Every structure is written in C-alpha cells, then in structure tokens.
Length: 373
Ligand code: KG4
Ligand code: ZN
Image (cartoon, rainbow, N blue to C red):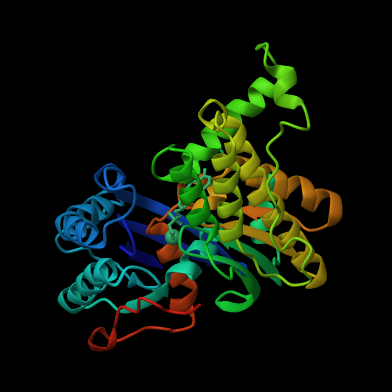
C-alpha cells in the first residue's frame, strides 16, 4: 500500500510517502520520503506560533512540499500513479492550520480519484513507532516491532498533549491518563521562556541541561562546591508523582520555577542548572507514571512518541527505569526523524486505518480543532 500523508496541524508543513507491506502476518512501514518545511524561524520572533501567520505559510508551502515528497518517492508530482490513499491530519490542532491540509487533501482526492483517510494527530504520533527507522536500524528494536507488541502502553508527549494510552491493537486506543493543565512540551516552552532560552523551549532546555550535567561530571570551575551544596541546589517539585492515577500536571512546576527564579538574584548565571532541575522534574514524573501504568496494565510493550520524545534524557531514563522495573517489557521509541510533527507518522496511522477500510469520502472530510483520540 502506498500512502501520501499530509500534516499541517501547527507550524510544520509536511508531506510524506509511506509504503506499507504485509508479509507472514507482519506489517512493515517504510517512509519513501518525509518532507518538512519548518516555520520555526518565522515564529521565533514572536516567541511562539502565531496561528494566522502559520496558516499563510502553509498555503505557500503545501504544494511544493507535496511535490517534493512525491518526487523523492519516485512518483510523478503532477499525476502520481499507484497511490492507494491520501492521509491527512484532521485534528487536534490550530483550526486555521488544519484547514489548509484538509482542503488540499480533499482537492487532491477528487482530482486524482484516490481515497481519503482522516487521521487524528495524536494517533499519528503513536504510530510513528511502527515506522522502520530510516538509518542505522537497531536490530533489537526491529525484532520487537515485528513481534506481537499488544497490549502496548504509549506515552505520547508533545506541545499540545500529554497522554498515557493503552493500545489493545492497531487503531484501538484507551486513554488511561492525561495532563490536567499544561502539556509537557508546553511546560518546556514556558520554562525556556522564563529562563530566556528562546523558542522552541524543549531543545533549548535540553541543550542547556546537558551542559550543566557535563560540567557536573567533569568539574572545572571553582564554584563547583557551591553548586553542589544542598542549601544552594535547585530543587523543583515532581507534581502528581505520589498520586495513585495516571494523570499529569505541569503548570505548578512552571510556577515553582518562576518563584525560584524570583528568589534568586543570580539566576542568570545558573540557567543551565535550572534547566537541568526542570528537565529532571518533568522526566522523573513521565517515566515513573509510564512504567507504573505499563506494569499495572500488563503491557507487553512500552511506546514513546511525540515532540518531547526527542528529549535524550527522557529516552535514557525511560529505558533505564523500564529495564529495572519491568525487564521483560521492551521499550520502542519513535525514531528521532519521526518524533516532532511530520507526515510519515500520519501516513503510518492511515495504513492501519486503510486496512480496516476506514476511509472518508471527500465531501465529508472536516478539520476538527478538538478531535479526540
Ligand atoms: O509533536 P510536536 O512537534 O508538536 C505538537 O504536536 O505539539 O511537539 C513540539 C513540542 C514543543 O513543545 C517542543 O518544545 C518539544 O516538543 N520538544 C522537546 C524536544 N524537542 C521538541 N522537548 C524536550 N526536549 C526536546 N529535545
Ligand atoms: Zn504533534
């Protein structure tokens, strides 16, 4: 099955062609192309995504991006032959951004007479786990991917959502827990803004925190003792960690960081340490709750997805805790190329929907800003 995927839910205009094959009852998904036109530089000046600007950029970019994705996959960009489906994100996301992808998909479906698959953005993130890594495949992960992985427990963390989802099979999602306020990525972005580290905040905090950890291991400065002294150490709370549920809450953590900065006249000299403290707090909660949910739901596999899953510390800590507390449960992580918003993940989710004949006629396709998983 050959699927063209489109993704325009926020500030990335993305198109990809994914080839799905099924042999001996096992599915294999390979991205033949994965084109992303990022608007980060445009929105950086505003410190966040400006919906109307994003929509205008999508209008400019969508056709060239689709053309490139088709061409790179060896298809004719004007009249591609052999496409089995066009998949598009219908939500959740910014309605003005979603509309560009949805209207383009409807038009192409009509013009090329190719069936449409309406994909939920969060389902897209989760299904990024089923794409073969593009390079340097980890043979162990590839083996796990082909084994019976269900029930699977997926932690999906991005700028717009933070969810623990139990999957009984492909396309079968049960939400076990979610954030009660800010999403994990949103928390990273807000913390980075408080620390004046710029936008997007996740990668900026991760870089700054890694710097502090490196110095911590190989101290060179005279201030090392001061930095390590408990009375001076930055300590932030682990919200919801003690609660006997699978929900999260990150807005209090952001406020705790704000108060800590307000009390510390010299915080600008310690941004790396604050970044580390913040990253540790978020990743401690995410990993502990995920492993707890995996054990209690007797999951066979743990999946990690979403923009925040690009975070190296989260990947490292989840793997370590799962290995310690549930060693028989392998952890699959979406390849870095498929963690932040992309269209290959949308086509991947669509592959399993198309196999179930879950198509939508073009007159009925609608963008839904609040689409639920
Ligand atoms: O999935 P995504 O691209 O878009 C949404 O669906 O929201 O996720 C974007 C989010 C942003 O909040 C960004 O700061 C965060 O993912 N992010 C990270 C990292 N890379 C991206 N957060 C922590 N560490 C990272 N390395
Ligand atoms: Zn996303």
